[in-house]
Length: 124
Image (cartoon, rainbow, N blue to C red; front, side, top):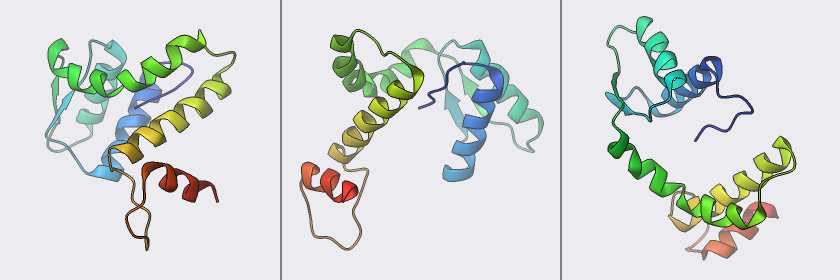
């Protein structure tokens, strides 16, 4: 996910370029109704030989929003964050723990560890 202080076209473009660089070029990208994401993808497509198909369908984006439900559940009782840096640190930790629980983070050279053991192995 993209977490920036401002949701502008430049930040969205950096996000898409980084995601494409790390994961390869997708055939289709599903986004919400954000105009900045659409503008950034259109700008990325102008420089590409084969353009990325962009889908702005509200209900297809629900899969992504469902994945963020765990973050919303944990942060709602906090009544917001005091500053951007605090929000960045807390959300990164919540997202990391969520990825460990889903099996998306593997500790190299270790036998199967529980989610808590994987988390603590990253700290030490």
